[in-house]
Length: 303
Figure (cartoon, rainbow, N blue to C red):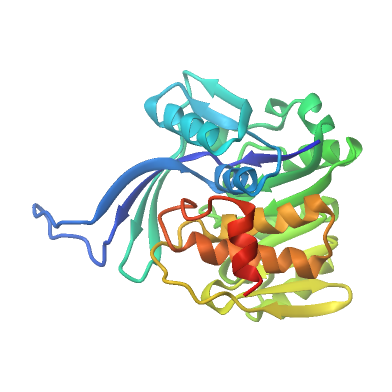
């Protein structure tokens, strides 16, 4: 059995450090420019595979060099890419990630395969082999019948997980609310959760979302940690002090750590501690490159 991560597959063009854009017609020096596999599903799948979980990814990319990069990077991390669909008429979704000297990032996003990805591109056979199905970046998957996919996953016996991402179209609760009764583990962050619920405090965001159906809600709060909300109450978790270089993949790495614990059958407290360590460690290098194996992450959360 495996974890199936479906959703956003993106070619990330990462540029750092960028504290301001150069004046028109001028050039500034930067430390690093790289093209790597990104997107919520790809990032979480990569971290899960490096933590030791058998992991498959599903999504839609083009028959282009950006798509080739995504497949190569995922394979290098040990992810099963057999669930990825490729289409010559579809361009791979791409994003320019501008990382400043504090490790914070801004994005320039070009739509592509993510917006054309549909639920029939996920085979029932893949769901039958999965213990957990995680949908990464649902708010940008505008052609996906997410309700159908979640329903099929439930019928196949999967636990279901969903991470929100920023909604560039502004649909927020209209898109998310019908899905929540079919979600076991819902992950969001303070900004996205506030847009969905109208609440500002993480505990209030979590309680509002919990009323709509999920068994567990996790609100990621960046440098201040995270909050676990269940019907038994709310629990805050601090992050780990690390030398931050790039926060691009922190939330997806957090999700990977949390789902790894769920896959292992751990209690939620232990899942959150592994998630917090994975999210923090990720920020010490570009994307999720600082994460190499499970022992390394577990060593951090046991400090």
